Each structure stands twice: as structure tokens, then as C-alpha cells.
View 1: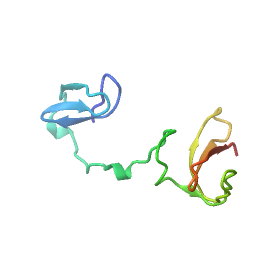
View 2: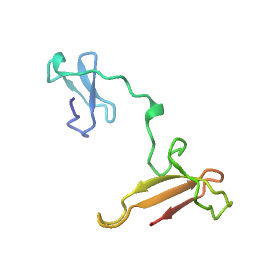
View 3: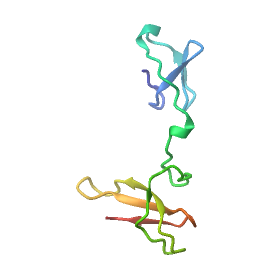
Length: 106
């Protein structure tokens, strides 16, 4: 596996040249082809978006919550460590009905 010198993302082989999908940086392959192991290609369906504006479908849901906007009891959520390591993580929710967002500090 080779990583991009520009952005640090994983590079892939394309027409005998290593190419970074993230920033487009190209460079000659530094290892012999026998050193690389090819795996099955990952499709977009297997990826889970975690950024603020992402479509939350496919993320885990919590059915024990209550949306203050519409009263729905089901929301998608993500967990992020927003404080120091000795504090519990923060859960960010998005209502499956109206899209309202809120957080829970546990």
C-alpha cells in the first residue's frame, strides 16, 4: 500500500502510475507489482457518511429518543468525542421524519 506524499490518502495503481483519488497527485510506482495485494473494490454503498450535511440513511437509529419538533421517536445518530478523552462522547441525532438535529452529552 502506498500513501500520497501530498495529502496522506491511500493511492491506487492506474495505468502503471500511482494516483491519489483525494487530491489527484500522481507518481511512479515505487514497489514491484508482486508487493501489492489487490482486494475487491469498495462501492459507495458500503461507505457511511459522517459529515454534518451528509445523508444519514444507513446509519444506526435510536428508537428511544423524542424529537422536540415533530414528536417522532426515531432518529439517526453518530457518536463523536467532543471533549477530553476522559469524558463520555457526544451523540448527534437527526430525526428520521422532519430532519431536526440535536445532541445528547450522555
